[in-house]
Length: 255
Length: 255
DNA sequence: AGCCAGTGTTCGCATATATGAACAAGCCCC
DNA sequence: GGGGCTTGTTCATATATGCGAACACTGGCT
Image (cartoon, rainbow over all chains, first blue to last red; front, top):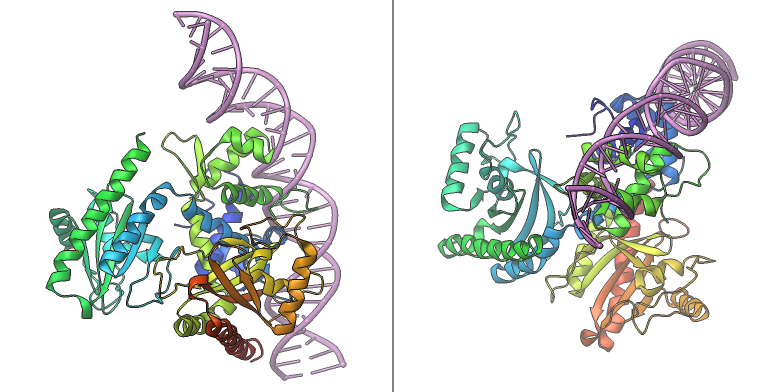
């Protein structure tokens, strides 16, 4: 989950550096030295030196008084490069465009990370030009089509202690979720019926580029636009998109 | 620009940690230990320990053989939090939506960083649903409306040695650029006439939330849709958007 | 097969950093 | 306005890290 100091050998101040950055990412506001020290448990003086160093380098910013810290812009630039440099995302790009075009709905590309899925690429729907761009944001795996498509590909899916409800339809019972995952395996795609966001359904398929699968793509659609035709059409288009991506990936991974 | 080791006192391994991350961000591929060592100049064994630590923490990933390194997903999550946690971006959100709505064109929010502008938020145009989402990407300040709006707000704008041409219309002469910046100050908005991207013009205004201004917003439009009406209309709408953002910011910054 | 060049990995000492305690600076509340 | 509390900053030394050199592997070439 987060950067712990308990991992045997390793460069201590490097671990603390990224633990500090992780802290800012989780909390996402401005914090004083003492607050950070209370949260991370490092000695005040160590944190002080570390923070000053990171401020100098643009990875941490301070308020005008210099006593409140937040994450810096350099972190944003490096984060964006993760997506630019990812070969799978790069290859999927065209196909995601195509999928957004033919469905007219919001398209996502996600990657599993612990119990969450991280959005690595998305396309807005034709009907709503201002989706919140969610690249780099986490979504619970158990409540999303992306996540369920990925969990279904694992023989023994790791699940959090508590399946936190996101809406009143979120599946919070382990057995029920496992049953759903079995259905996903049978029919080849996952579905989220307003389980993550009220009024929004999603369909998802996992990309079989490694075992178990790590990446998935999905199409989101408001229930108001979801009819019997779309109910059949979207999964079919998703599977075609999957094949296109897997095909290009095959050429790239085995040249 | 990047994290150098020359900055007087500071935690050495923290500086190296972020310098390493910066390196991956700049290069954006996969690199072997030796390649990184040649680029950064640190001893091989030091880099080795550092890389192993960062891999353990998810900030660096390796290929299946474990000898090629790239940036890890944790970096993406932290980068995204920079935008989520930024008060100005948060406040501008609604107004950017409005601006995208009334213009129907691509809208950007950018922040100055050295000689570049970093895209912190964007809205797709109504006509092209698949703009490359460029959040977290850098653009040269001298060739963009965002950048020129920000440079114009500085009494002595810092410019790179060489004004690199991005298109054949990029202003590469310092004097000519300074003249253009003077015009920007006079009329209150900046314009980019295919100077950064062929076939695309932009208008921009700086947000006067601090002196000198650090943030700007812009509207991009293909030359093919740019007529006399839009030529007047878009700058006017930009200025209205600016006022709306500055108004909300005033309330938030001086409660 | 065996050599060679290049690369990744380990190890013990010189060096830089982490640390707790002491110092300074605000800030609030009475 | 001053006591007491909280927070930011500095400093000397124990400690962890950075370093070069030696070792281990790998793959390509003759």
